[in-house]
Length: 217
Image (cartoon, rainbow, N blue to C red; front, top):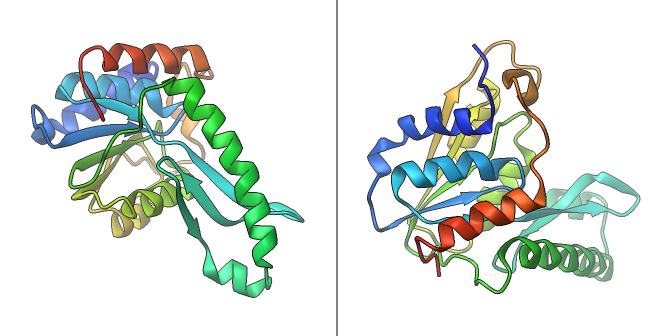
C-alpha cells in the first residue's frame, strides 16, 4: 500500500514516534525540501518545534559526485578523511569548495528561515526527518554534522527506506525509525502516489507556521 503523499506519510511516521510527544527537549529537523512536509506533520502531532537542517555536499572538483565532506546548518563541516587522503586533496581546494557551498547553504537557509536563527540543538533530542532513505548519503552527512552540535540524542525518522540503509543509519544515529522498509525497495518515489517536488514556498510556509507556535532558538 502506497502513501498518498508526504502528509499521509507524516501521519504514519508520527504514530511511530508517540513516545516523543509533548516533551520540551524535542526538536524536529527536516532535510529540505522533501522532508519538510513530512516533518511538519510529525512536529504538529508531537507538539514540537520544526526547523530545517540544510546539508551541502563538498564534491571533489574533478568528480563532483564524489563527496570529500559536507557542511550543514550551524556552520559545521565534516570531512571524509579517507577521500581527502586518497586523492591528496590540497587544503586550498577544500577551502574553495567549502566557501562556494557555504554561500549556497546560507542562501538557502535565509530563503527558508528568513531572519530566524537556526535551532539550538545542544542537549536536545533531535528527530531528523526526510521523506525516505535510499542510499542514505545525505542523511549520513546530516547525522555526522548534527553530532558536532552536541545534541543529547539523534533520532533519524523516515516513512520509508531501504532495509539495509535503515540498518546502517541505526549504527550512526542513536535511534532509527523507518516506518516501512519494503523489499525490494528500488526508489523512495515508488512508495508515494503523489511524489511531486516540494516547492521553496511550501517550505517557507510550513516553517513560518511552526514558528508562530514554537520558538526553536
